[in-house]
Length: 258
Length: 273
Ligand SMILES: Nc1ncnc2c1ncn2[C@@H]1O[C@H](COP(=O)(O)OP(=O)(O)O)[C@@H](O)[C@H]1O
Ligand SMILES: [Mg+2]
Image (cartoon, rainbow over all chains, first blue to last red; front, side):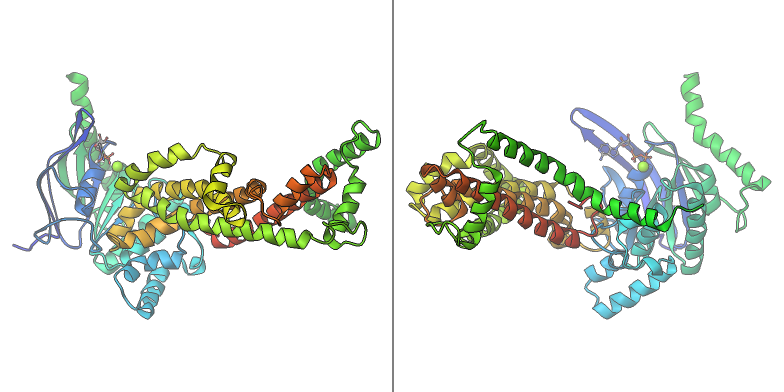
């Protein structure tokens, strides 16, 4: 199939320069994401997961290589690529409604249309009762629901999520994982999800991309063919967990023996 | 067993009165000290609280001493208020745009910031003589000095507000389709509102704070003028009455600002003065 992938990262490297130091955040990373996929990036902290995601979002430009969306270079942030940040990044001065309506309003849609979009997505994430609340009045889980609704309301084709549930307690995290999967299955969205939890990646992803640090590289790209809904206590789940954990820690082993 | 209802409601009443009761302790102790010090004649130069109270009544409504200051409180208060709010408004008109420029545009910052930092330590009192030369004796000088007093807190807080916007919010706005200049109105300004508001509150407080200096410029009316007259005429009760009126007016003015702020900044968790 010669279908154009939604995201095509071709031999991308990223170098940051701090005073006299140069940091190779990414070296020669390539990854292709097709429409409708749910891809998880995992790796130890500092291995370039956020950098890769931020290049897909258009917040950073590659130092070398190409980042393409639908075959065209990504030149900057765009509503077609929505980002969900770990620390929510909601607008604190806007109510839940207005945060969700921010994108549609910024695109210049008429008020009535913005309202109906907001109504739809507030319901999708189950926050009708909190429509007029401000972010500081919400729990972490609710804030992240608003952040998800905000990018969905903006018609994003691709949702980029950078450790979105990392700051949440275990119960909230599990509920949001279920809800996210349900939304993904219902809408045919494409999701790239960064996490450092192997278990979270296996629970969510159709494909798990393992990254290793120093400099950030893509270690392996693993398609998962576990049926959904997935059972975290099943032997198949645990087999995959063992394999991925080994890949994740492979570079530690090398360091010790070196 | 639940406590008797009267006991519980008594406790509820105390909880509501406690802040007011605690706030009154220090003023009452000082008032008592003042009363003792003056009735024991530790000093003869300061009138007793009762004398000042009586004079305040005459200052406000007249009918006791019937001198040049009887029943003139409203006139002086209005004159001072017009300078405080006028000078404050003038300061805001200058400080807000300059603050936004310095905060957002590096060239403006390099152009203006060093100069303003150099001027800032010069106290309003030091400007008094020059202000009288530049603006003449009278109300214009008073305006200028009050304006100067209110200018820096508004400016500095505006600069701080627009500079300390969480960078994530710019990224969030950009990925939602709000880019370039639109970000100024949709992100920078609303994010800076709490700081700007703090600046306005401090600025208004300083406008009241410098009103006496402002009215040393030979204006005939105003609370500062009354205090200066009281000093030349050695009428300490007049001086103290002027001080009390400034304190109360400045306090009430601040309470109004805080109430407005709490409504306006309901979204901001840390903003309840
Ligand atoms: N803006 C930046 N400036 C300098 N160094 C950066 C910047 N962003 C990331 N880095 C560095 O790049 C490396 C990869 O970071 P990051 O992509 O955030 O990793 P991860 O998300 O996997 O923890 C780290 O060493 C980090 O310090
Ligand atoms: Mg990261």
